[in-house]
Length: 180
Image (tube, rainbow, N blue to C red; front, side, top):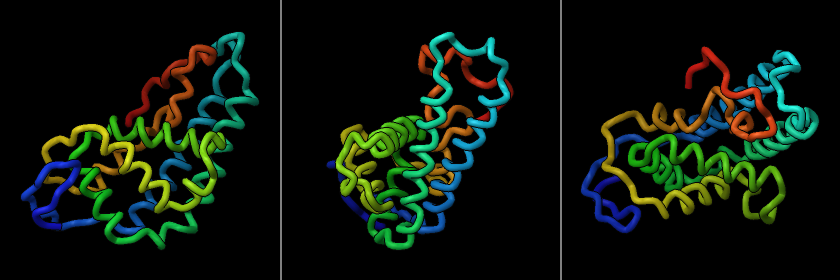
């Protein structure tokens, strides 16, 4: 990509790398692994770590809904257009990973909960298009000279990938000794 307009600004930067469908598959399977690991971690906690209002079945189902949704996206990864992959690479090198991570989690929640029409998020390309649309409302930073895939993989949090521990009724808090 050379001399392009992104987020309303002219950018005279050459981006020599883009993301591939395999990179997106790695991101999505990374989310799956992180969610599964989070459930294992929570299952290993002693009962006194939980708030008395904690609902194990509700949060277990919440994780399952996300896993089901992400698994529905995986078969469509190879159909992501190259132009969308280039936009995602640009997004990866110009936005803070924490900002993108929060938006990804919010969009996953909308899709997994059924709060949006299913056809809006039914393929990986549609989901990622919504991600770009949502992030584009935030001013972009200066592009970094870095590996877009490495930066994109920072969108996923290994510890509490769905931010469940942040809910006041959970009470168990962030895991100690984990790294993002």
